[in-house]
Length: 120
Ligand code: 5GP
Ligand code: ZN
Image (tube, rainbow, N blue to C red; front, side, top):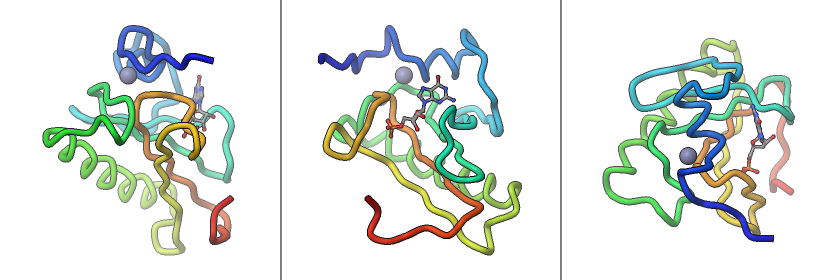
């Protein structure tokens, strides 16, 4: 299977532009976040840069600022959702071995339950 990593047909770019509606929990100039369609925890939010970056391997210097903003959003959403103090998991998968399926980088924010280590 060939996986499309381009911006032209990117689902998460369409969420960011509003072309496709999604369950938004956080928005700013550079970042947005929405609930995962297949949640793996009581709260499972995907936090994305508005700028299309396919994978961590495609990150450049300007992208580094976006990555910082994803974590600032994670902290804010965890506080909003009420589990910042209790604890939560943030994960970013890169390419096939880690299970990346959508090629617009996203930080998974998972909260509301106990997490195991090492992850599967
Ligand atoms: P990855 O496997 O690339 O790290 O994560 C992709 C995530 O996107 C998965 O957790 C999957 O459930 C989620 N996802 C895929 N399609 C959609 C969709 O159409 N809407 C939402 N809200 N999440 C999606
Ligand atoms: Zn995209």
